[in-house]
Amino acid sequence: MLTFEKKIDKIAFVDKSAVYKQSSLQKMFSMVFKNKDLSFFDYGLLNWEMLSDEQKMLYSYLRFISGVITYKELGERFGFHQRKIAYLMKINPFVYVVPCHRVIAKNSIGGYQFSIELKKELLDFEKNI
Image (cartoon, rainbow, N blue to C red; front, side):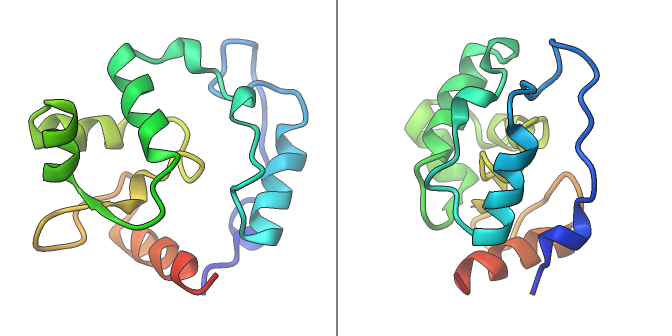
């Protein structure tokens, strides 16, 4: 099972244009990983202005899925080619809180910007909640 407290030991903020806004986000992530629960996460802490309209639309949708979905299904839903969906998952700056790891290929687990092993661990972690 994945233990997030041991994997993430520091969140640093460089400037106001960073992906995450600074206000209490580190505390929020600590609670998310400790409680294994995203239902109370404040998505207003994320810097949505830096995203394209396509990213905003897709990532907003992903926030509310509870299981897995395929690249093809997302592509059909939003009118994008599944390769574009894969690209938008790859550049997702809000990893885990916008769960791109829940997007899988039709016949396999698909890719993940960090590693396939981590993707498997995240999916197993969520199954066991």
